[in-house]
Length: 90
Image (cartoon, rainbow, N blue to C red; front, side, top):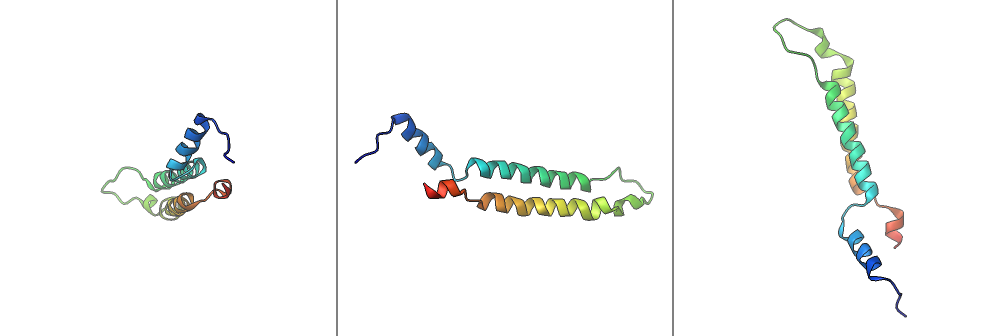
C-alpha cells in the first residue's frame, strides 16, 4: 500500500533532506558565533602608545575573553555534530 501524499508534501520532505544541517543546528551555530565574537570583543583593548599601560594584563583580556572564545569554538563543534532525535526516527 502506498501512502497518499500530496505533491507539495513530497517536495517539502525532499527539500528537508537536501540540507546537511537542520534548523536546530543553525540556531546553535548562531549562538556559538555570538559567543566567539563576544570573546574577541572582550579581548580588545584601547589605543597603543609608547607609555606602559597595565590594562593589557587585565583579567578580562587575558582570561575571560579567551575562555569565552574557546567555549564558543567548542560549542560550534557540538552544534555541527548535533543530531535531532525526531529526524533520526523518520
